[in-house]
Image 1: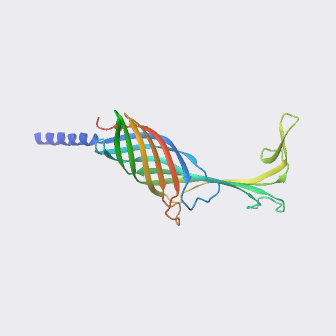
Image 2 (image 1 turned 135 degrees about the vertical axis):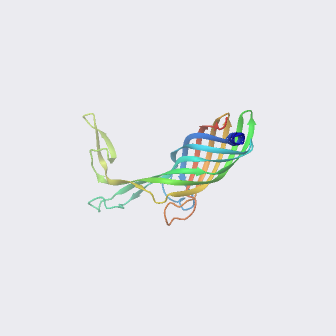
Image 3 (image 1 turned 90 degrees about the horizontal axis):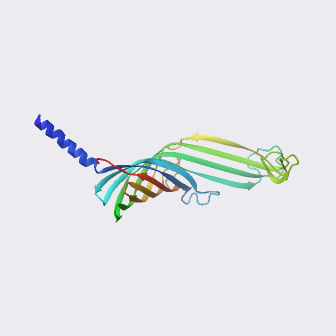
Length: 252
């Protein structure tokens, strides 16, 4: 019986000592995402898009105050949007094709991921209770689905009393607006959910300040995974992130 009690106490001591090396950091922040790589440099209308980032970081201390391993589980969004204007119709949305036209198209896709990084972290003491952390490593991510929005509008010369026309604005006598002498809008829009490729991977880099238990991180992710079956492995997205969190050290 004494041996059993001693064994249980020894296992509890080992568990407590091990727990003191672990910490959890709930985080929330914003990301800026843009298409990357030579395949997308010449696509018109590419722009940075704001996205959310939220999750829980996990850290295991290998050498106190020097070296640790970081991981966690994060909800992250990626995607892109583009828009263009062209002269002459592309889709046959009007009845009289002989009229001069111009068109505007807009497309946006938002991809939803659960992301798990695995990074090596170096820690440097800057002042009492203030540390600088530098981390780098790969990540893997699972796609929960992609939301796609496509809008196409075509404009022909004409008059319209609706707000859906381009042209001169006249002030009406009844306190309203009359739209005329401009372009009449006609087009369509479409929304869909797809799940073309459920796996993504890439590289993560992070720099952060740790003041007491408060954490602020600046990160960069390079997304390299395929977006569909016959896609190639190359740089798909640039993702910059800024997040804040609070570190809970276990075993204390």
